[in-house]
Image (cartoon, rainbow, N blue to C red; front, side):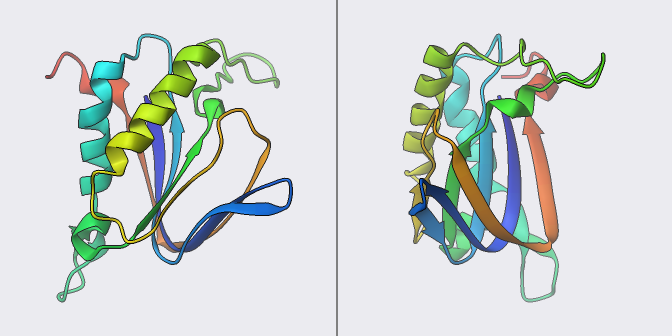
Amino acid sequence: MKAVVQRVKHASVSIDGTVRGEIDGGLMVLFGAGEGDTLEMIPRFAQKVAGLRIFSDEAGKMNLSAADLGLGALIVPNFTLYANTKKGYRPSFVAAAEPEFAKRAFEQFVQEMRRYPFTRFGTGEFGADMLVDLQNDGPVTIILDTAEWGNQK
């Protein structure tokens, strides 16, 4: 699994001109599932995303999470996180999970993220053509990838 996590002042996702999810500060998360991922990985992955300490404390250090501060989370599915651009100019997406599994993974990830104390919560829609609007704060952008976990449990 991969996630691009951005600290935002505002973020929204629209489908067919209608806002489907919106937050006024917190985490904007692009989520993708890849070949070899399992549903058993999702609780730990969600814990990592929700617990990222990328918000400033009183001393100005990134020492607090969005969940600590009760901020929002907006989660959008994004299979293009698995783009392979090694050859040519057209990305290959063969490393992305099959759509049926990827949809289940996205839905379970959203369910896990809902367990954390976010004040506002929104999602995109798997398979939809979406328009994402955000104001990155910092900018702070973190990439999480379960491939980096190795054999850790």
